[in-house]
Every structure is written in C-alpha cells, then in structure tokens.
Image 1 (cartoon, rainbow, N blue to C red):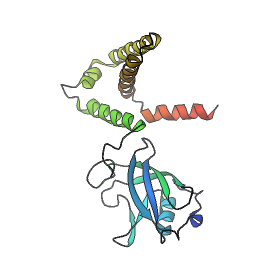
Image 2: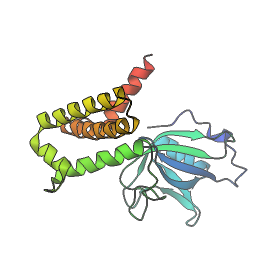
Image 3: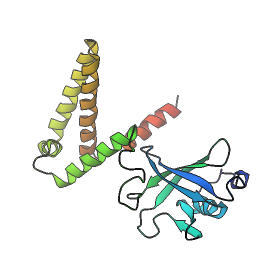
Image 4: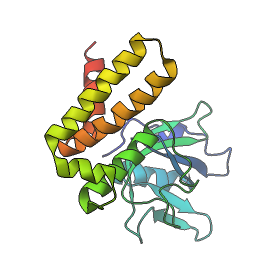
Length: 207
C-alpha cells in the first residue's frame, strides 16, 4: 500500500542529524519487532513501495528489510510521535524479522496481548498440518468438527457456571479453555483470528 497522508517534510529531521528512529510493530499482534533508522529518502521510498526501508548507518545506503532473506515488512501505517522525531511503523511481517531467526529482535518473550493468541494460533496451525500422535490438538482435528464443536459448547457452559457461582479463579481458567478450543474450531472451519477481529472492527465502526 502507499502511505499518502504522512507529512515527511514536517518531521524533525534536524534533531537527529537527518536520521529518525523507526520502531517496527506487528500490526496484528502488536509485538515490537525491531528498531531501525530512516533518513528522508528511506521514508519516502517506504511510503511509495509499501515495504519498510531503512538507512544503514554502517553501509551508508538504503536497504529494504528482507532484501536478502525475503523476510520483508509490509507497511500498514506510519505514525509520528508527538515531537515528530520518532516513527511507529505498523507492519505485516513476511517471515521472521530478526536475522537470528526469531520473530522479534527483542526475543520471543516480547509477546503480549493479541500476540499470545497469535502464537497459539500458529501452534494450532502446526498441529493441524503435522498431526503429531502425542498432541491433544491433533487428536481433536482427527476426531472432527462435531467433537471440536462439542468441546467449545462444554467449555462455554463451564465458563457460564463458574461466573454465576462467583468463582473468579475458575472463571478465568474456564475462559482460557474456551478461547483455546475456539481457536481450534476456527482452524477447523478455515477461519483466521484476523478475520474475526476484522468483523469486530467493522461492527464497532457501524456504531
């Protein structure tokens, strides 16, 4: 996509000698992926191509993230901070971001919020594809849609009962079970969590 509403010339380029730090964040999971630097040319190229492009302080040139590995970053949006001297780049990663093989340059423990659901969704996808014999998730997929739907129904009832009985700890645990089995059901139904979130966003926009 092309970013058209970013006033590149109004950013505070002088404050940091022509380079602005750019924090890259996964637009889906909100996981912080990496930090890079952009000069005006790198930012302009990023806006035009939709691929995150940095200025390499060591090589003294522009470089497109993933130009060698293929693990590029597709730009979703770019937001300057209140002082116009730092950028938050929301992006969709194509593969792992860190050159060491992890999703984030800040380590795999840098997962929170929706990032946990995304990691769980990825694990369920792996179990769906590989079907290891010792996997509970793979067993559910083998048993089929009716069994998975039954588990979602059972967990939903257990959440409701725990809530009605005022059992806060059990409500929390049963809710976690429900969300887990719901993700399995979504995979079985070929529906991604992102599609569900988009549906919620569309409903919110209609209010």
